[in-house]
Amino acid sequence: MKTDQKITLMDLRQTWPEKLASNILTFGLLGLCIWASQGSTWWTFFTALLFLCVLVVRIAAFSHRSKTEFAGIHALKAWVDTEAEREHAERA
Image (cartoon, one colour):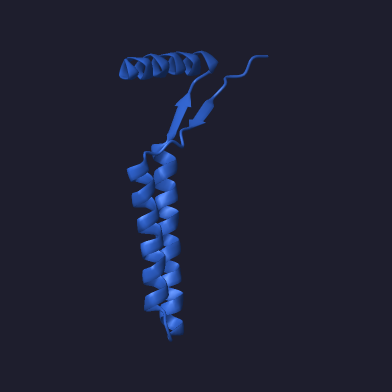
């Protein structure tokens, strides 16, 4: 009995500007949360909740953006060959 394969490839490559922007946004929001919550239990709760929501949305967006699905191993091999040719052409 042969079952259909479904292959999911997660591409986690980022350029340095993407990494920099991601880190600035994350730590900037975290700093804002810490600053806004000084001396107030309500603001501590609200900013922590806001920070967690933004973090979950960013992770979901990144996951969706970097995921490629293939119907089987042959489709994956064809995609890898195409990517290798494209990278070779860019370097030449």
